[in-house]
Image 1 (cartoon, helix red, strand yellow):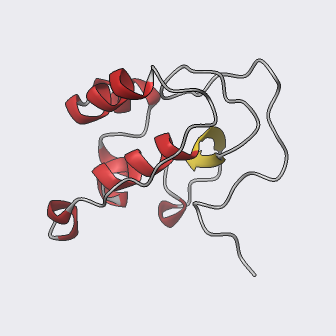
Image 2 (cartoon, helix red, strand yellow):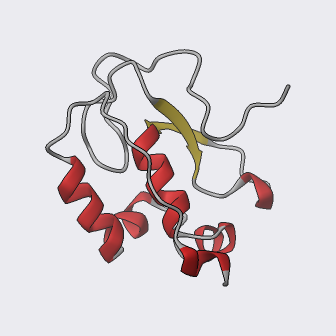
Length: 109
């Protein structure tokens, strides 16, 4: 069965690895992999990232927006909603996870 994008990474990253989105330590639980160029558009390179950070990215942007404007960590961190999320999640422990809502506005783009 193919893995869904929100399934955890099977092998844990290096113990001192940092999340490329929020900069917190990755830890060893609630970790996903993110494609900066979406798989839909033939993206191959994957990066370990907190599950909550990954969910936030995909709740804020469509696959096409990720391809066209948000295919770098700097561009993602520069978006106001992501910046606010990073400020909020910075106080949470590495393994912290809670559901993120999918934006209704995203569905109609």
